[in-house]
Image 1 (cartoon, helix red, strand yellow):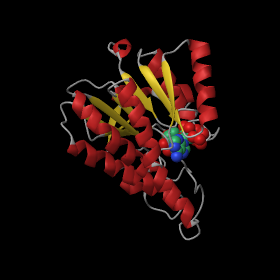
Image 2: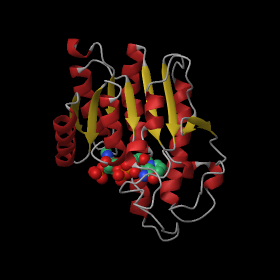
Image 3: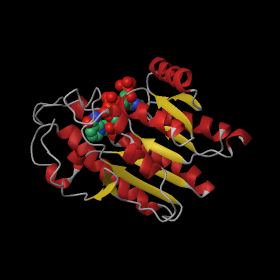
Image 4: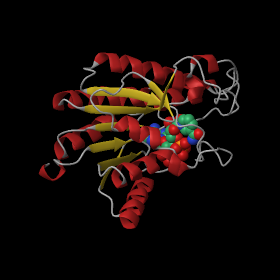
Length: 252
Ligand SMILES: NC(=O)c1ccc[n+]([C@@H]2O[C@H](COP(=O)([O-])OP(=O)(O)OC[C@H]3O[C@@H](n4cnc5c(N)ncnc54)[C@H](OP(=O)(O)O)[C@@H]3O)[C@@H](O)[C@H]2O)c1
């Protein structure tokens, strides 16, 4: 534990690829943090860690974590608690889009349920599990990677409903948890990363993955007077309900 006293400890979910991988890299490389990269697929997680350590010599740990399993989240909690004794930053990044282009009347119920288990309950499990440790240490920054598709006025069509409603619910969850902790010590915010070139975003997206963590890093390193229970894009405050003119709701 002594070794980590001078560094912030950040945990990233879904860190093996896409935005989660890039965020893990930048938190360690640009902000000098010790990053706990987690993933549900152990092999891909170890490959990601190997890649980051060998190319950039970064300070990282790895744990297997499936956010849809409370048991898996608790297992990682036990290891983090015993190895580090604290967690400063939690990035809830893991997510799936299992109903792209599918109509709410046709989507298999299992896909709807699975989407909520990962995109919504995943963040519930990690926040419920790790917030008491943050409270005990009197410091915490939680960043929920959401989407502008979850803004209320974007909920206007029967397609992609599992994804959209899971992000709408994640936004609500962000506000609920923010209201449950001491806002001077713990900041809990959500953000829309924009349309990012990843497996989920596709090659048609307009944001390079290297540029995607900017707002995540900003919210992960908020000062004492920073916001909580808020929604951000491009490091600017946005509304929970109303998309601004840059957002095209029907983009997936
Ligand atoms: N890309 C965009 O345009 C965009 C826009 C708005 C919001 N977002 C949000 O940004 C976040 C990251 O997306 P991305 O674009 O980087 O997508 P991605 O490349 O598909 O990566 C998603 C990550 O989530 C992980 N994951 C999925 N289910 C998991 C589970 N049960 N437990 C742990 N990890 C799990 C995946 O792991 P596996 O490799 O095991 O599948 C993968 O590492 C998501 O929450 C997404 O909704 C993305």
